Amino acid sequence: MERRDKIVLEHVSFVYGAGTPFEQKALDDVSLRISANCITGVIGHTGSGKSTMMNLLNGLAKPAEGKVYLDGYDINTVLSDVLEEWRTRPEYASLSARAAKKAIKAEIARRQRELCFRVGLVMQYPEYQLFEESVYQDIAYGPKNMGLSPQEIDSRVREAAAFTGVEADWLNRSPFDLSGGQKRRVAIAGVMAMKPEVLVLDEPAAGLDPHGRTQLFEKICAYQKQTASAVIIVSHSMEDMAQYCDEVAVLSGARLILQGSREEVFSHTDLLEQVGLDIPQITQLVRLLRARGVELPENIYTVDRAVELLRERFAETGRCPAGGAK
Amino acid sequence: MSDNQSYIHAEHLCFSYEGRDGEPDEPALRDVSLDIARGEYVAILGHNGSGKSTFAKLLNQILEATSGKLIVGGTDLTDSELTEEELMRHRRRVGMVFQNPDNQLVATLVEEDVAFGPENLGVPQPELRRRVDEALATVGMTEYAGHEPHRLSGGQKQRVAIAGIIAMMPECIVFDESTAMLDPSGRREVLDTIRMLNREHGITILNITHYMNEAAQADRVIVINDGSILMDGKPDEVFERREELRAVGLEVPQCAELIHRLRAYGIGLAGEGISTPEGCAGLICRALGLPDAAGKEGADAHGTQR
Image (spheres, rainbow over the protein chains, first blue to last red):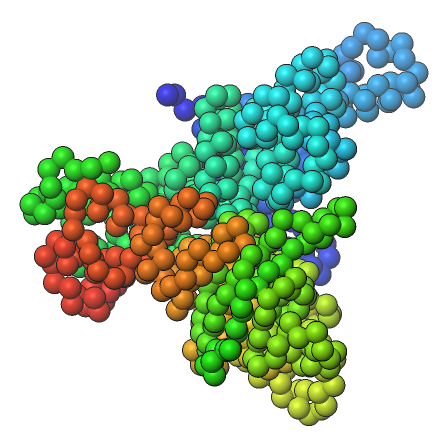
């Protein structure tokens, strides 16, 4: 499929506490392209700037320098764009200064909200942000704010619930009666229900057990395929990233040090380790095998691929029975 | 009776949380019996809600057992005549490190935070100073003594939390998903610290975790499911039982998964070592007829190869 940019960051920098003794550069000249219709993984150690970057994607925070484009539109020009448009409108002259100001403010707020609907953010530990009386109302909160009709809200709630595996009989229960993993799914469904063009998930599987992790990631993949949206996942787990992401970006010390397909990124194992990240365990094993003379390419990062290639090695030595099980 | 070697002795231990209606809920722990020796390094696995954290909380009496017997370090925690004084002494011996580093640090300076526990125990100067310095040195945080805890990285914060426990000179430390919120380098810092405390200081370690790779570092792995012990053995033994682990929502480490799948194709990969990449590399090389002793050499070659 043809690759299309959904979000483009151009020379973006961000500074916390500018002008104070605690001034800290959180992003330093980051240029990144995020593709439409695929899953992009963002990895980096704590404090590398990942979360800061996520907050820039829907205008929640503004870069100190550089530009953030969504479908080619510079999202931080909302203010000037609205002012510009209003100046040319015929009704502008007829309004009192006060009324015009009010109308312009409302228009700016509307467009900024719209950005938040288009780029849906699921923060870390989102289950702590549930607050409604029922699971249904919690998932419906976003679509309701978008001003959708009750029928549309209802269908979106049910669709999003199905995406994340929120069961129908939970919908009328209080979210606080659910387990942590169940709450997490409700919180994610709440953002999916807004049908964002870009879904950003910050450590979506943190604290879940292995089964819960696998299940959640599989549901996110299915969601991506079905909606053809851009999904961005921030995670510390290299194994998960190698398994589920199409493209990967790596941040270290506020700078972008790698970006590309997962094949490209995971072939730079030395660099990943240098910046304090892990490489998948299977890649470590392949490295050990290569050192002992087993012929394998270096960039193996999934168990599937390792099984496939090792079977070939065993077949060559005549140590693998033909056909085989499974 | 617990034998002399056993540091933690549980016998038919049960626990139920109180439900909304005041009636006991489904038991979180059912009939758990086990012995953990002094100086052992044990990992505890189980899916969310399996009862592993409940077990940890019984160990230092954040929770009290509903029935059964629990003896830790010679103190019978289930004895109804346990005095407040004995309980305090017990809690000093069994420290706990939790998941969120931000919830565990209380003071404005790192060294004050480490001193918080022993100071409350009434440890006088200059003993207090000595303990704080030693604890910080043990976790490699001496140079941060005068820093503000909230400016540290996650791994550093957890190490400060560990130092605060070491300063109370515990016999046993329970880590309850203490690496879950850390990045890979933070996890490594904490895991290296755990191993060092066990190997060099003889502290008994219980590490409750969702990371299979972490569990592979322990001497022994206990799998809890639905409040009962499902497996108990060496990491190699436990990770041989992939299907049973899957059935309770767990997975084996990637390298063990590879071995299991190759075996399913009829490739003969018998022997120990399934829980670590090094062990698996050995299994595969032997089966391929490659020299097994390449271990050290291979590792060196790797450094110069590229």
